[in-house]
Length: 109
Length: 109
DNA sequence: TGAATATCTCACTGGCGGCTGAGATGTTAC
DNA sequence: GTAACATCTCAGCCGCCAGTGAGATATTCA
Image (cartoon, rainbow over all chains, first blue to last red; front, side, top):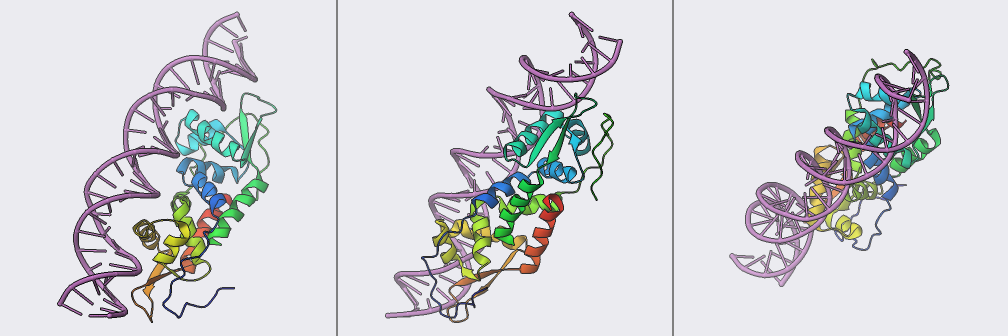
């Protein structure tokens, strides 16, 4: 699968640019302590905003901002708690997370 | 492996902060079009700086700056071409790249 | 030797993104 | 009702980083 080392000292200046847009977008989301912490916490099951804010040592509105980014990217979704609708419980969209990992794997896989 | 949904409306405010430092570091490196493009190109085999700069449409010194970041992170290494030592050929450290992917997988795996 | 090529280093700067603060919306309890 | 709680939205500030430019080092060729 991997071509041999180039033996002639002639660099090729016509190589195509690789398409890394998806991977860069996903990496940009993961390249933040708060967002990465959210995704890691949600791997263990749903959590409400105040739980994640407390665990991460961040303010609620800051965590909410980051959750909005993850929601727009389709990586997480929210639903009100059945017994106490005051709390919004977030959970991962595992299919979308799987696609995100696949995008990263196209670069460093 | 995954706990059931919380049925009581009582958020837990004493959850531990997940350790995502490694994943955030790796994601920060991937969250750039030029660095991601470099790593993707090197997946197909070694390339010299001028090849990557041409393919990515970036200046040599800019690509060199990004390569320095990747080198400090241990993801790539360089060696002069045997036949023409004017060219510095970079290649991926696959073991380090594997560890980087593993770190990301601890967050979105 | 000198010129041309390939790459590196580093100081500087402009723009992007994270944190904050203030206010709005929705929910529960009294 | 209203008070307290949970979350959201958005504008503004500020620090950081990618790109630039200038100069240095290394290698080849004439």
